[in-house]
Length: 349
Ligand code: GDP
Ligand code: MN
Image 1 (cartoon, protein in one colour):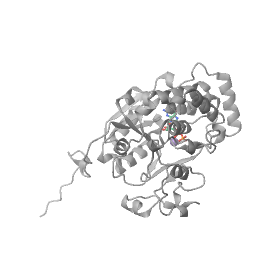
Image 2 (tube, rainbow, N blue to C red):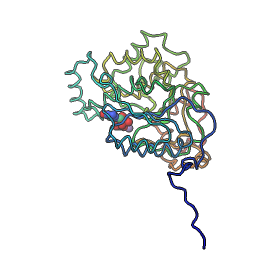
Image 3 (tube, rainbow, N blue to C red):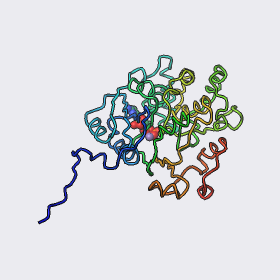
Image 4 (tube, protein in one colour):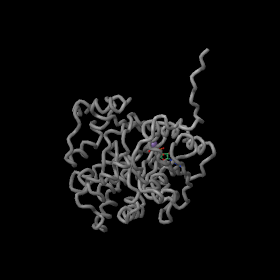
């Protein structure tokens, strides 16, 4: 008569540790997600992948931000999925509303016009608040003040490869301030006067412009015009102290005053990218080739079969966007004198 083997149940101590906790120090870092209550099942999928591929061994915290109070289901489900501590913050009204210097009628006419021209999110007020919040306020919410590093995660993203090291620690040890996995050209219709506003800032604040910056990633004519290249901000690992610096805050406030978050539809991606490109030294911006990522409609799947097999990747290398015509990543490689990975020529179309 043999006894059934003893099964470990989730409530047993040690269940979460079966895969082991990564040794080594932890950085003062958190994941951060802006979401609505209705995003719960889409953010649950993102969290599950971030945990499975990385955080179950590192147990970093996760901050959730919302312009409305999070409901009980949102909190219960996300807390059960995150291996670190979870924190929930409600955004103050002044970070999610029209500043008093904005002409409401003018902003409304812009939205009606953009709706007619079928510009994506062109008619949306909330999307504009979202872009302004991510550009100028998420990093100074009280919950975020406790941390030095952040990793932004959006609903419905995918991670396709294991992450075998701590990206926060990589950033800290290599003096990086901002990072990306996908880059592309912005829709011109959403930012027609953004570069004029940036040029005004550069003229008024030359002290903030870094020597050895990445202007050549953003402009093909020495800064006269914008080539619309930007790093996608739905994935970011970055340094919060940089975003809280006088240089960045002056940059944000100068742009904000010009009104383009409401009179046009400036996205936080070009705003962050232009700031990183001008205010940081080029070595401070990192491209994470080994973090394989999807946000509709683009995929970053690492070039190089060995990397994909070693990291148990499940992305199709044919889907990799990096070397296609609409990506700006090869400009980043050229600017930084980096050698493109083996096999990139075969992925150009
Ligand atoms: P897209 O990626 O540009 O298509 O925009 P998303 O719809 O993914 O929005 C970007 C991020 O902001 C996501 O994390 C959303 O969950 C969040 N978001 C967008 N609109 C709102 C909103 O009105 N309220 C809140 N709380 N979050 C929002
Ligand atoms: Mn999104």
